[in-house]
Amino acid sequence: MSLDEIRTRMHKAEEQAGRALGSTQLIAVSKVQPNDRVAEVLRQGHRLFGENKVQEAAGKWPDFREEFQDVNVHLIGPLQTNKARQAMQLFDAIHSVDRPKLANTLARLAQETGHCPDLFIQVNTGEEPQKAGVMPADADVFIADCLSKDLPVQGVMCIPPFDEEPSLHFALLAKIAKRNGLSGLSMGMSSDFERAIALGATHVRVGSAIFGEREYG
Ligand SMILES: *Cc1c(COP(=O)(O)O)cnc(C)c1O
Image 1 (cartoon, rainbow, N blue to C red):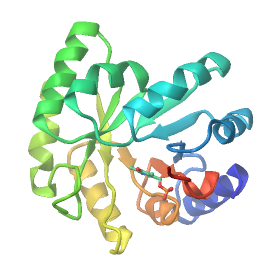
Image 2: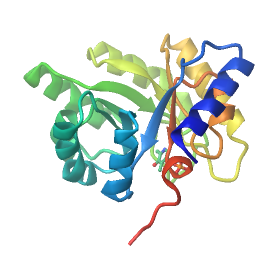
Image 3: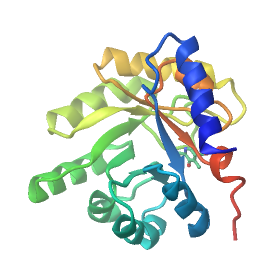
């Protein structure tokens, strides 16, 4: 699907939800995609991208940033504390802050460098044991803890369980954001971004619908 088609669908969803046109940002998820496809999307003028691995992003985005102005790259995948320093240099936002140890490391590095990307707290809305994210019941305390460390928390993020209606999870995430006074809602992917926009998403993370299926290996 072309970028234009995705944007048209986003605008339609915003309109139906009574939201301002353009109030949802489109993160083009470029993980695992060949560089020529990513370059094509950059040449079409798109500037906001998502990656899920620090190493992979380090291998491609410094070069793209030299070639194209005003590129924004967000980390949407898990972050190990030993890669936090590198991630803070590489990314404009981190959507996967999900545990005290990581928050402590980010706070320490932010103090040391005077710089911190925008942060989103990942919430495990489906309470899935194998999935990253703070449990919904622990979210308020964790968010307050991050804010008390002066971390620039902009919002919350979720990846709903594969086999459940995502709208329930989007609604739960929106509720957690609201009661914590956070405006950012990172939710919705290729198969459900319109439903996420209906429930207030400010950032949708769309990969395969833009780039086609990912080719692994
Ligand atoms: C890969 C990925 C996406 C994009 O998924 P698509 O189904 O290809 O749109 C969104 N969010 C996260 C966290 C991802 O890892």
